[in-house]
Image (cartoon, rainbow, N blue to C red; front, side):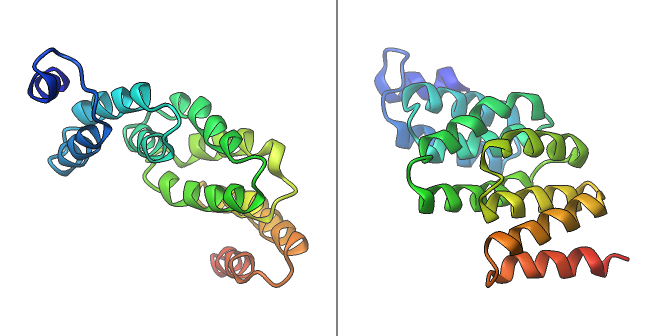
Length: 171
């Protein structure tokens, strides 16, 4: 399928337009052709390694297809890319929460998130992400601890309070 997109795009067998790859990924996911979508998004990341959209999509597809172990380097790069911009880093952490919901293996996802957020545990959004992953993996105490830590870091933040309520509501 990637070869077909490449021939149609340039006639020479190489995609040079990332927007074509993005469209191809969307089409492939729509028809549940995960393998083809994964090939396309990997090619997109090769062509535009700095593209946050490409990496986010790759992480989502890897999670949805059970390739959790392959996600770590991409997650690290995504977070490192905005490390110097606190607002962008916080936004990135919140976007990861949405992307990671595609994953089928909640336990593996929790372990991955636990590893990836280690350098960012002083950021409320990292604690929130860790808490959500723990909640999804049925790790009540870890989820509660992360929710409370997020509230300590950012006392007026409603998301952290909501997470605590959701965890306590499962009792």
